[in-house]
Image 1: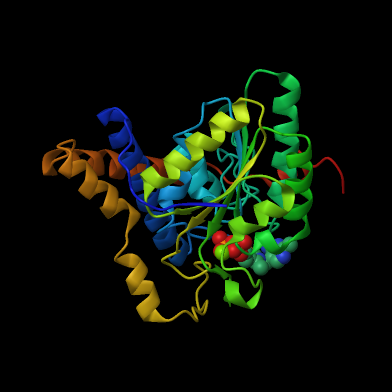
Image 2 (image 1 turned 90 degrees about the vertical axis):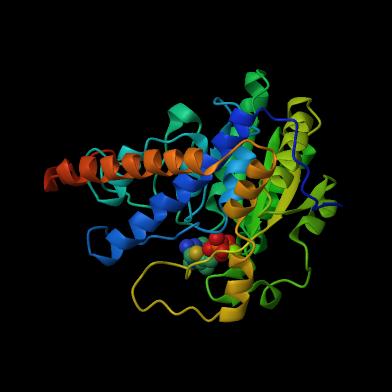
Length: 330
Ligand SMILES: Cc1ncc(C[n+]2csc(CCOP(=O)(O)OP(=O)(O)O)c2C)c(N)n1
Ligand SMILES: [Mg+2]
């Protein structure tokens, strides 16, 4: 296992770095709006916010090509936006409308867009790991240099699919990245209560693949680790396990009355390590961003989110007759 926590501003064009900031900010503003609208009773089902973890999705997806495939979790908005999903169709799905990605019948945890290689969010903890390992096998068989990425939580790393998939992906040298978003909790349960290792990445050794720990709030650290792992995967050398140490700012879900048993001082400490503020600071230091540019980006994002809400609210709900459309087995 190697440790790579320092922030090295990579040799990336300024526009690429600004685009990373834009995507992270889009995730945050989208979820702030989704959370407000959920509380206002306009959004149904369950909403899990990714706020605080944005550098992981954007850092990893910035190292991918459009055709590379990813899979997400129950906390999936960030991965969708990082891979380039359409905000209108995402918001419409949250609002339960026909124009949503899942025709309004899936909600927050069922957003997929095969056109951009986003194979789906997933309400089954660790369920996505097995699906996307199949996509890794597909990429290997296609022989076009594609890679597949599994995002999952620290809690999911205790489940069977994680171990089975790492084993087979390592053995078959599948072109995969396994990206553990270690936010230190599975719902209310601290990681230390469910596994004895302090680093999930150490588990990689058991399967004969590299395991890397990165500061998941440092987008450049995440990007560099992902980039190395993508090179390795494309070269036919097999998978890498990347553990991103991060933290969610909000409760496990947005459900009213949802307890948050975490120490408020711990939450505040992590908020002071805001991944977006850190990137913003680095861009300003390099002369790549000023107040006027940042305000313009914020205005654009807020405009796009407002437009997405308008689109969602103007769209019809699915009709009762559509309840069984697209159901393949019952
Ligand atoms: C198979 C399965 N077991 C339990 C649950 C209930 N559940 C939903 S999210 C969650 C915690 C997941 O923790 P982690 O993998 O660390 O992801 P995080 O929520 O921290 O992003 C649990 C237990 C579920 N959805 N699926
Ligand atoms: Mg977790």
